[in-house]
Amino acid sequence: MTPKISNSWDSSPSREPGVTDSLWQPPWWRWLISALSGTVETEKQIAWLRKETEELRKSNEEMRKETAELRKSNEEFEKSNEEFEKSNEDARIQDDQQLAELLRQNERLAELELKLDAVLPKSGSS
Image (cartoon, rainbow, N blue to C red; front, side, top):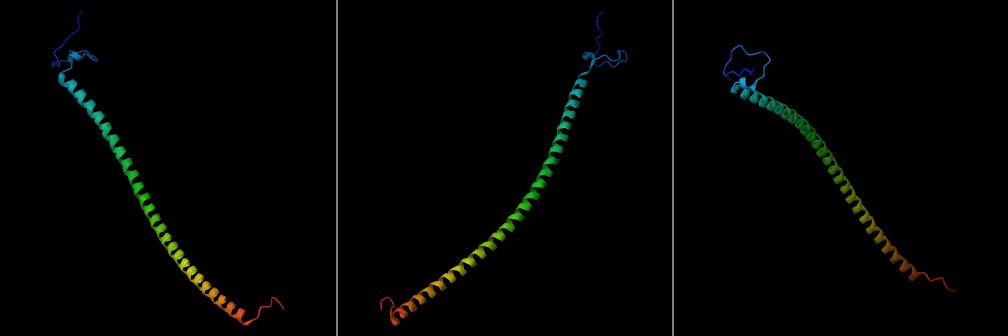
């Protein structure tokens, strides 16, 4: 017996249920299956892209928050650093003034010592 081959456009109910003879499938049927398969795959890719996009948005938002926190921290550090530099400069100026005053006092003491040496006799030999 030869298998029944029917016209691809034949839609008569004489086909046996469950028969998957590809010869009987009309050309548009294969195209529809192919198109639907592509659509399903495309929808999967779109869903995946949406998920990835949402994850990237969340990650981007977290990075923006971290960047804002780092900027704030950096500004606080810069302010603290400026205060330290000013304090350091003030201390340096004060140290320079104290050193200058000590040098003046040292010079004055040296002058007084010379005058005392000139006025008072040395008591090294009697």
